[in-house]
Length: 306
Figure 1 (spheres, rainbow, N blue to C red):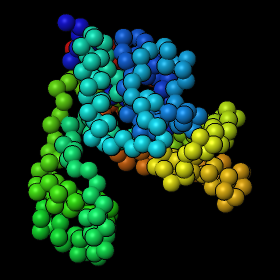
Figure 2 (cartoon, helix red, strand yellow; figure 1 turned 90 degrees about the horizontal axis):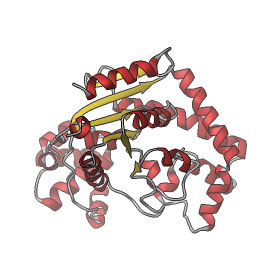
Figure 3 (cartoon, rainbow, N blue to C red; figure 1 turned 180 degrees about the vertical axis):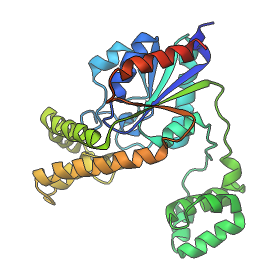
Figure 4 (spheres, rainbow, N blue to C red; figure 1 turned 90 degrees about the vertical axis):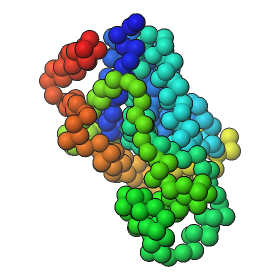
């Protein structure tokens, strides 16, 4: 059996750090296939603002879980996890190396850690009732029904408290029981990518400027003409949200562009909170260091042949 058959490589890091270029190189060298764990890449027609790999890049090695939803659709975390596991299994069966690549920490962790994700659809009437209650009352109720969940969820995060209560009440089982983890049966190597903060910010700003030059505004206008609505979750993504505000006359174009840069800086910081640099599961590489790509390749060769 191919040595890569029981392996799963995960490449993670903040936006604009350089995941796409490195993952293409690794996939080409190690007979891999790229599986997206970036929630922004799911949507068809949203190419420029999501920094989606170009068709030319996608033609170099097989890519999966890109362009799988229309902008008016929502892909739940549970649905994504199932698709990811199915895709990983298929890639492994074909004797190739599955490479999970992404900056959406929740999606990466759901796959790597095998989160139990309750299959309880939104119960809007119940949510409406729960939303009328005081936050402290909701927290006390969750503490009574599911102390383990109450210990993990910040009581100030009312949305998560309500979801925990919703799942518990609808399913009849504490959400903490339903969320128990079952890690997938793979030898997982987690490759974390970082850059110095100011360097990363410069790369973000350059990317935003390039997106504008490539026609991001025209892409959004085309989506609007096709019937996309500002209220759709896909339209809340970085770049689209700010330019929509410009098109509605809420700010100038220059202000919108600066807003995209500022909020993308903040987003990159948030991404880093999902994976700590002291996490023993992750091997970190600073892509700004000399000879780092050779070091990455050497590390992967050792892992693949272990």
